[in-house]
Length: 119
Length: 191
Image (cartoon, rainbow over all chains, first blue to last red):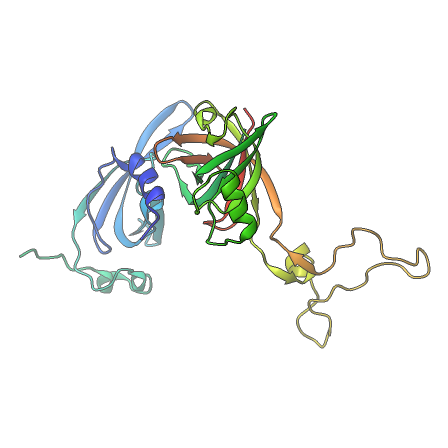
């Protein structure tokens, strides 16, 4: 358990944030706010969440996707950061572990994740 | 104005760029005796008690929990509870804590010496090496970096105050402060 004073301090900041619930194995899409000079725009990044780390305001997710030229890309996002506009869950995956680093060694059909069937 | 605080731990903000935050909790302090802005204060730390402490508790009519005494700069004119009102408008504080004690340490840990090669029979791994010249000056220069006690030393840093929660006595300051979580230190209001 974390210290209650630290939790209180972080709770105040996270009160307005609404992040959907997701787990490792889910396909998520994040809209990242990008500042270019005076303009700001949104850039979408979609991939499989392969790890969730940290507690409170420091919580991060690792999102893996295969880019257009077949190279794997992994980006780490602080999910409660103001630099993230929104997070959407696109697909629920059925996986048996919390960290999916084994996906790095797999490619093509082997690297697929079955969709979670809800009862 | 000075206050006794306990380091709770660190957190961060979700703003862009994110800021590191250290949370400090004000320790309950009783003012015993005031002379020219300086005061003898009592606070609670552990259960240590002896006749000298009991004598002081009797003198200042304190309860048995207040077993530590210290001299602080205070805003109070009269003995009683410490006056925390200065913190409402404070912007910058100086934070003094003892750093984590690392015991008797060698020069590589204590002074970041490079050390010698690990292999090839060099026989010089983590040693100090030469500590000076020969016949002239015939002594070691003062301040030569050598092994010894590392840490457990008072370190003072300036921190900006991010927020002050008067209800719980929680002070959030930007950046880090020395020492382990749960250790006691003192803060001084700068601005």
